[in-house]
Image (tube, rainbow, N blue to C red; front, side, top):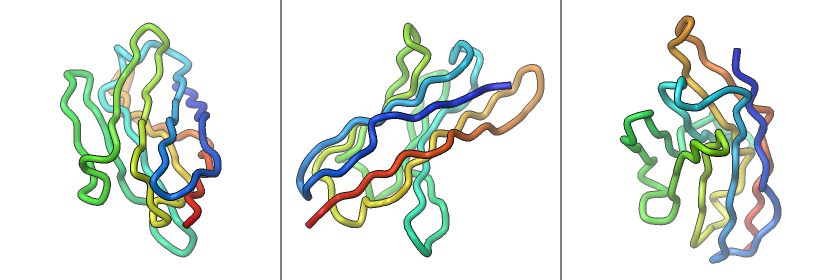
Length: 118
C-alpha cells in the first residue's frame, strides 16, 4: 500500500513557474514508476511526466522543455517543476505510483489544482 499526498498547486500567471511535490508513505526506492498526470475540465486524464527508479524520464510533448520531473530519495517525494506556464496547463494534477512489490499495483494521490491565468 502506498499513500500519496500532493502539494504545491495554486494560481499563477501565464509565463510563470510553479513546483508540485508528491510525498509517498514509503520509500520511493521500492516504487518502480512515479509520475504526474493531469485532468482538465471536460477532458480525459493525461500523462504529464513520469520517471522510473532507474532515472528514465518520459514527458508529454506539450510540456517538453518546460516541465522537469525529479525524485528526492531523502524526502521520498516526486517533484514536478513547471515553467513557462500556459493557460492550457490549467488542470487538476495527480501523482501516480506504480509499485511492483509486494504486487503490481497503481496508487493515486487526491490531486492538486493548478490554474494559469492569461
